[in-house]
Length: 151
Image (cartoon, rainbow, N blue to C red; front, side):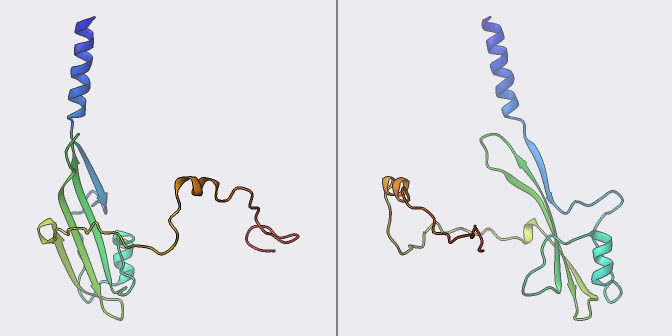
């Protein structure tokens, strides 16, 4: 019985050490080696037909489309590591024709340190008890024939 318990424990421990690979974003399909477009010939319509919707279209500049893909490895108890990242940027002119195609990889990225400060908010800070019983006995005020969202 002890051998069975030890064997199960070893199997579970080894299963936790298996790394998993995950792919996110645009996945290059079979037969494709890279995302390309010919400057001055291809348009937004032809790029859209060939590669589908872009991963990101900036709201203030819709003349640049980004197709992003990344691969990461995750292992139990370790931080997930991104092994590859590819960003293809299609730049278009005002007529919608491709002017330039740029490719960025993991080496072109920058590590950004996040700030853990909090912005203070105005208002009364309620205790847990006040939050739990704060609305007890208060009924919603709706007029006759009115429901959620108006009459």
